[in-house]
Amino acid sequence: MRGSKLPRAMRALAFILLLVGTSLTGTGETLDRAIQALIQVESNGRSSEIGDAGKAYGILQIHDIMIQDYNRITGASLQHSDAFDAQTSEAVCRTVIGYYLQDIEHPTLKHVAFIWNGGGGARHRVLHPRQDAKQGNLNEYYHKVRSAYHQQQ
Image (cartoon, rainbow, N blue to C red):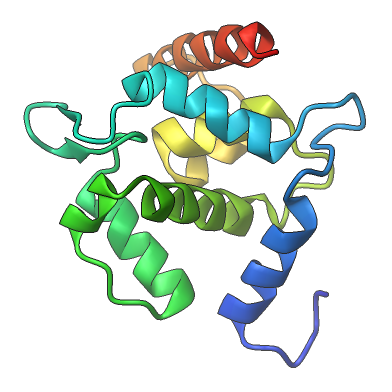
């Protein structure tokens, strides 16, 4: 799809459609299951959840900056409060993660967790870890997501 004449947002959405239910690594990890693990870690499925001192909303504990990123990627005009709707939250998550996975040749659950917890640039820390507090936080978050992922039936 690279080099395509499709607008950037359409390429991102097309890529996301390819990821739905497909393997992230060739070992059975899927984006759908990864998102369910994120939901488990973030809110235990409670769509009315407010966290991070009032800055994170819904089942995926979405910050306003993530809504802004989604709007930039898609051209939409969501408001932060839209994150309380579970379907909207999942769409935001799938779109943002899919967008940042486009340049990853073999995306993994670790990439997904790092993007969701640390922003799009955090995906590079999977292969190029740093010795700083953010890396420690990302690794800790990934271990929680991995545990939730493997607890799914």
